[in-house]
Image (cartoon, rainbow, N blue to C red; front, top):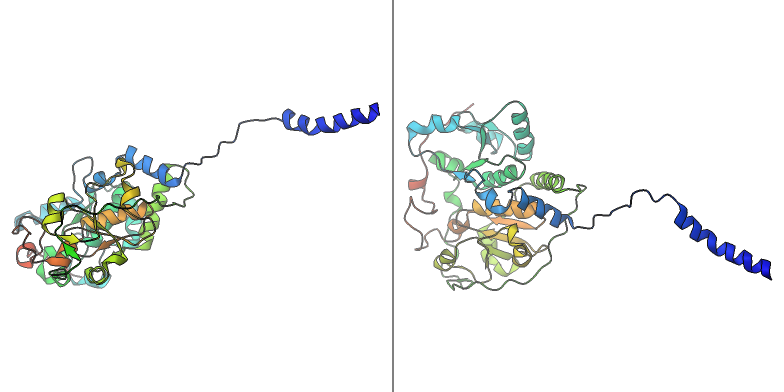
Amino acid sequence: MKNLSLLLIGLFMIPMFLLTSCDRGEDVVVNSTPKFNTLKDYMVANNLDLDKILTSTDGISFVVDAPALATDVTAFLNTYYIIDVRSAADFALGRVAGAKNVAFANILTDATAAKAAGNTKDILVICYTGQTATYATALLRLYGFKNTRALKWGMSGWNPTFDRYTAGTGNLVQGNTNWTNVATPPTPPSYDVPTITSTGTDGLAILKQRVEAVVAEGTKTVTPAAVVANPNGFYLNNYKSATDYAGYGHFTTSYRIQPFTLALNNHLNINSSPTAQVVTYCYTGQTSAVVTAFLRVMGYNAFSMNFGMNGLWNENPFWPAPPAGNKWVVASRAKSYPTVTN
């Protein structure tokens, strides 16, 4: 009986011995921080929050107007490494001097190659109306080209021959029952932040992967007509000041999101559903393109409304008279600057 007891004690001690006597080495630490949080913290700490994308730490805005005078055109163009993301066919019909035709999908590789080859100029992105260019500008800034700029109004503002902006303007919400001038925006519901899938383990690696993925997706937009037809079918973000939110009016269900930064902590959590089709609209479709690119990098199902207020209500009486403000009037916005062809 005594031997049996000793045997049982020995059998009990063996697994305990094995578990406690092996070489522990370094403890394995599992990083359970969500990728969204890792990315967010990195972007805030490295001046890549939305406000720094709209205006870089050098004070450079994401857009630049065409020069005021024709005599300044050459000096203006010589300031930049210029990429034109329009189709090859349209690029051949007319472009600014010195521009290089680059497919949107290749903007990161082209900018990286140009830098490796010794380019030290800031990048200027040109498209048809300034909206794709601002989307590209946001992504390039997030990728490390912090002073990239878009030509405001694109080729539409360079020469009226290439005007595509006018066709996008309209007055769809004038008299619409879903449009209001109520000054207080509705209170947004609370949402969890998106789940970001990435093989990166640090903020920089996650950011690079996310920017590359968003570039590969191409631009994401909706038309004003689609939103007017079914405003309740979208999660609408209005990127305007409080004064303009009431002055121009807005969709009854739209949330005002200016200012909008990651540094406000739960600001993203409460202002954009991570699963809904999140549509941001502004004045011209150019700022909303930046916001949309930024949100997509952060994992949101975001879209920019083409042409902004100009597409919704171009003749809204609240617009300041051009050249102030952002109202599109081809006669006052489009310059008559030269282009070159193949």
